Each structure stands twice: as structure tokens, then as C-alpha cells.
Amino acid sequence: MFDLVLKGLGETIYMTVVVTFFAYVVGLPLGLVLAVTAKDGLRPNQGVYLSISAVVNVLRSVPFLILIYTMLPVTRFVIGTAIGTKGVLLPLFVSAFPFVARLVESSAREVDRGVIEASRSMGASVWQVVVKVLVPEAMPSILSGATIAATTILGYSAMAGVAGGGGLGAIAINYGYSRYNYAVMLTMCAVIVVVVQLIETLGKASVRLSDRRLK
Amino acid sequence: MALIEIKNLCKTFGSGDGAVHALEDVSLDIEQGEIFGIIGLSGAGKSTLVRCINLLERPTSGTVTVDGADMCRLSERELRQQRREIGMIFQSFNLLMQRNALANVRFPLELSGVPRAEANKRAQELLELVGLGDRLRAYPAQLSGGQKQRVAIARALATNPKVLLCDEATSALDPTTTESILELLKNLNRSLGVTVVVITHEMRVVERICSRVAIIADSRIAEMGEVQEVFLHPQTEAAKKLVLPSRAGKLEGFVRDGESRAVDECRGSLIRLAFDGETTDRPIIADMILSLGAPVSIVYADTRSIEGRLYGHTVLQLPSEPETAEKMRRWLTNQGISFTEEE
Ligand SMILES: Nc1ncnc2c1ncn2[C@@H]1O[C@H](COP(=O)(O)OP(=O)(O)O)[C@@H](O)[C@H]1O
Ligand SMILES: [Mg+2]
Image 1 (cartoon, rainbow over the protein chains, first blue to last red):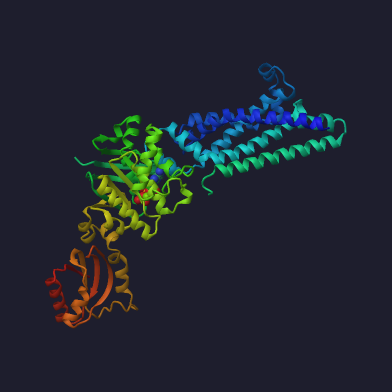
Image 2: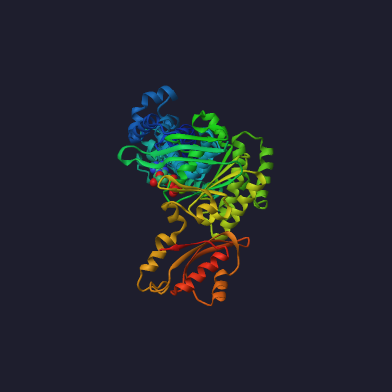
């Protein structure tokens, strides 16, 4: 049992970290582009905003399990396998990055318009406003969003256990649910709860430490 | 040539039925080194006007020239360069909340690529100049309103601009802090020679530091000139409304109100004394009462003494006997105090 927990935990953390990382590599710039090109943004651009928005909305409205099955061929082609821990990385990423883009967009739009205005009055370019104002000023909110993203991704990675994924979710289903071993199932659930709590605590602490408005 | 030249400036927001004409045919020149006030009621178009100076708002028509450059014709790059010549401060300070005071002042220097060490040195000097040499590492959340505005001023001056635009810079501050910020602006104007444009809805701000003023009402310049001239002898209705609130509102209320004790219509006529700083700060009305042995009532007074000189308005009700009233008028004339009859 202990070995199972350790194996599942390792896989779950691996999936969560890798997917969260790549979801931000793509979602962060995308979210910033959304914030900048929005109607009340720095460089309003309906065309860009609406096209990205459309992609994001479509990906977000496909139910995750269906996404896994729809993506099977692509996953096999890109990753080499469509099962196990590695097999669910791609579908997890595809469902996570649009979510992250929206989180980042809303964080960036929370930044006080007056501050952006002031930076423009000092001769900042759009790029400088994004890099030196939007991101640093929104950082506490972005970190808080990242906490939500990471826990959500962890939850989805567990769900992927049903469709041949790995990690704690897969163990709960394959060793617990399928074999009527409720002890295993409940243990895995408890571990998931603990990990989520841990992420929440870490996230809250990083938000508190990074936010200079609170001191 | 004036440092800032605004010609036939119009700004319309929106179009069709919902169009708002925020500025209509505004022309004014602001000279190098002066402190120029723009005063008007809320919604008059003041913010839109200053924002057209650094092109945060693009004029619908007309031209804005700052230091010889036609702002509307500059390329994106040139405009960013030119904005470094135009500092701006705001009612809500608009500091970067995640940067400390030093890093806030360093911000415009970072934008123009000044090396870190040099930028830090300059930022520190500026914070010392505005009296915050001991709060370099403080974050905006740890500073009072007045201190935040000082950081904002230091930041706006970091690139050595020729102009400092102040949009309601003291409107969020208490009277004492307002006074100290105005004092600072005046000192900076004197010591650095920076031209200051002050937007406000408060007369005392203009009186305190401006040499010239433009009154803006309903999207147009109603009146413009030396502060004393405009405030003491307003010509247009819009200017009178702003400068002499009593004439439009309070005083009429007094006169019409039958219950009022302050003005008795059976008694003598009302006169308005205007003090334009020519009179020294001595008790004129008390002197007059003592030397003529007859009482007057003060119906309204809005005067203040600046550097021992008296500025403002007082409305008196003279005694009902025409001879005594006439004596008083003569006495005032002899003292060199100008007055007008109120109807
Ligand atoms: N971005 C905008 N869009 C539409 N209307 C605006 C905008 N900015 C200002 N206005 C309108 O223009 C008028 C002048 O506003 P403003 O210049 O802010 O006045 P003030 O600063 O004197 O209070 C107001 O009627 C205001 O509602
Ligand atoms: Mg305004």
C-alpha cells in the first residue's frame, strides 16, 4: 500500500507540475494578449481578441474525458503513447492552457487603469507596460490564479485515471474501485486531498509574500 | 514661442446621438517657466484638456504643440520620446504598488534605458529633493497620501521634463497636505524652472500658486488671464459663477429669504468690496465703523491674507440713511478700496 501511494503520488505530482508549467508557458502570453487586445485594453484589436477567445472557449467547453478520447491519435503521434502518466499529459495541457489564459487575462485586467495610464504618460511602449507594469502589478493575482490552476489540473489528472491515465486517480480506480478494495480507494482520495491542501497553503503563502500592498 | 500651444482643439467622444463634446475650440498658450491654472467644475473637460497635451487622448481636431513639436504628427516612437519631456501627476497618485518608492522613481529611467546604478542615484536624489530621503524603501501602501504624491512628483521629474501636468493632484488630500504639496510644486518651479500646469476645481489652489489661469466651462475656455484679474473682475457669467458663488447662489438666497436676519430689505444697499492684494491686511471695516460711528453688516465674506496682503471679496450692507451710506462710500474710496454696487 505504501509503495502504491508513493508511486501514485510521484506520478500525480509529475503530471501536475509538468502540465501546470507548460500551461503557463502558453497560457500566460495568451492571457496577456487577451488583456492587451480587449476593448478596454492597451491596444484594442477585435480580430485578435475574438479569434483567441473563440479557440479558448471551444477548448474549455469540450468535456475533459471526451477530449482525451478525441485526442487519442494526436497524443499517440506526439507523445508516442496514449496511456499511462505520459499519455494524459497532452490532453491535460490542452484543457489547462485555455483555462490559464482566462485566469491570466482576468488578473491582468484587474491592474489599476490609472497606473497603466501613468506609465504611458512616462513614455512606456506597449511591451514595456506589459513586462514592467501589467505582470509585476498583477503578480499576486497571477500566483493566486496559478494555485487554482494547479489544483484543478491535479483534479483532472486524477479524473484521467478512468481513461488509462496514471497517478493517484488511476490507482484509486484500478486497484480500489475495480477490485472492490475501498481501503485503497479512500486512501488515494485522502492523499489527493492532502496534496491539494498543500498546494493551497503554498499558494496562499506565496501570494502573501509577493504582495506589497498588504504590509 | 510659448512652450505649449493649443490651437482650436476639439475632442469628441463617441459619435452620433451619444457623442460627448468634451472640448470645443479650445486655444491657449502656456509660457516657459510659468505655473498655469486650469479651473472648472466637474465634467467641464479639464482632464480631457491635459490628456490632449501629452496625447493620452488624441484630439479630434486642432493642434497641440509642446516645445516646438506638433504632438499629433509624431510617430509612435517620437511620441514616447516626447512624453519624457512632459511629466504628469494624478489625483489618485497612480504609483506602482509592487515597487517601493525608490523603484517607482527609477521606473521612467528604466523605460529610457538608464543604467541601474545611475538610475538609483538619480531616484535617490529626487526623493531627497521632495523630502522623502528617509523613505526610499517604503512601499506605497506604507505611505500617507501626501507622501505618495511626493513620490509621484519625484517620479514625474525623473526624466527632467520641461512640463509637469498636474490633474487634480491635491484633490484627494487634506488642506494642510494640499498646502505643503502646492508649496513643493512652487519650489520646484522656481528651482528647476519646470513649467507647471495645474488642473483643479478649487480656487484656493489656483490663488496659491498660479500666475495665470484659464476658466473652462461647458467644454470651452470662458476666460483667461492673470489670476488676480480673472478672480477679482470676472467678466463672463461662467467665470462669475465659479469665482463669485455668492452672487449666483448664496446672496440671492439671503435677499429673497423673508426670514433672513442677515439682510433686511428695508435697510440700506449692498456693496461688494474687492481686495486685490493692494490693501494691507488691516481691519478696514472696523476702522470705517469706528471713524464714522455707524454700523454695517457683513453679509458675505471670502477673503484671505497672503503675505500680509488681502485678497477676496466682502459684501456689506450699508446703513439705510443715504447720507451715512454716502459717507462710507467716500471713506472707502479715499482708502483706495474699490467696490461695486450689488443689486
Ligand atoms: N473616455 C471617455 N469616453 C466618453 N466620454 C468621456 C471620456 N472621458 C471623458 N468623457 C466625458 O467628457 C466630459 C469631460 O470630462 P473630463 O475631461 O474628465 O472633465 P473634468 O476633468 O473637468 O471633470 C465629461 O462629460 C465626460 O463624461
Ligand atoms: Mg478630471
